[in-house]
Amino acid sequence: MDWDQLRRVFNHQVKDHFPGGLVQRAELLRHGEDPAIEPGQLLVRVHIPAPDEGADYEAALAEWQQAHRDEMAELRREVSLRLPSARVI
Image (cartoon, rainbow, N blue to C red; front, side, top):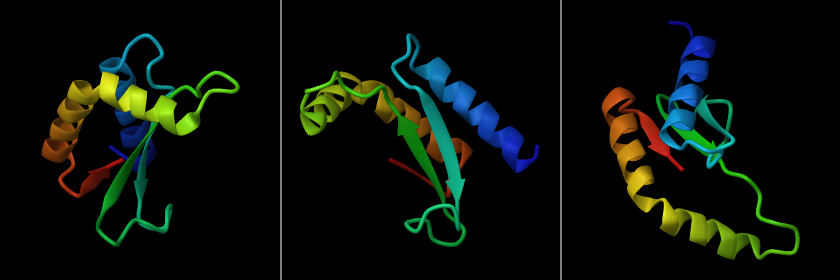
């Protein structure tokens, strides 16, 4: 499986893990695509829908994290088993 195909499969799996539009997309990034990624590491970036206009972004993010903490923990476990060099954000 090539890198682009792996990224598409991963995005699809994450979106399946969070149905109903809870996640807009997931990105699997490697060294050189983000300054936080060290050589040999991968980073998972999950994009969620933006809060309503005028809403407190930090509070909305914290609320989403709290509401989906069990699903995120499961996702972290799955990613660590399949892609041990990945860090989930």
